[in-house]
Length: 415
Image (cartoon, rainbow, N blue to C red; front, side):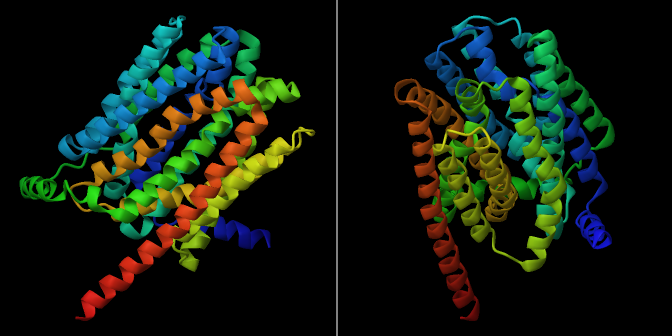
């Protein structure tokens, strides 16, 4: 039995390119160092003594910056290529993270987060497009899952160590680690992974495709339904990093170390199970739209269980449910987005994909913190559960639209 599991796990990594493995390594280094973000709401509330409303506004500027960065990253990726965008965004972001520790005022922190995220999140659409270049079409989902594995392995290491560092020496050390790992990881990337340049003929072809592709995104009805689902998933998922760390302390008296352990559980499960699960799903040929539906159900359920607040163990149950939902859904939201993109406008498609999550980061934390401030955590969790229900309904609609689209294309091919 153990041998069978080992072979299944090893089989899930076969056929991935060397560049994808290097990209995963670099992502792990970078993600391991991203220690401040899971504790940002606690840092603002407890160290800088911001109000709930002020913390919410900082998160709004975080989301606006992320949205600007995603848009710029997508646009620049289509124009100058993903490689340059990835390198410069992460390099500059490293220095900005180091400087963030010296910002102490509410207005200053809002402006700083706007700038940092505008630069840092240019990386995301560029990285997603890089997967299309460095992996074969049949390996794309597994390549993305390997990068997600690296992110989550870093997430196992980062918050767990961060909780100990905060207790031992405060938050300032984390800003240095965040910045330095950004810089180190991108220097590794430039050394290990070389830019793939297009020939003059390919560049001319891409220019022509860009002219033809601009309107494609905006007339893609299934894609806009999909983006709405991603937005709702983001509204649910970002509660993990904004509302729940505060809830852990105020409802159950947990400290940063305990919160770090819950994040550790999330990351550890993903590291162990996600690659074999994706490999198994690909062999079963389950449609991405169906997986997105299952993910929506689980994400909604993870907050329904939090309506019971008399036992701290419910936090573990909630984390287990949302982790499975994340594993089933997130690799296939990326795959679905890339599958809809036409050659020449991948950056634009992936920018809109990442912007849907950025918009959730603008609205979600502020809305959640305002609801918590006025009505308490349970009302907030009920609201988030309703977001999940809406995502389920939209997922069913998306399935129907894609099925109709497939039937129409089949009919056109026959005629």
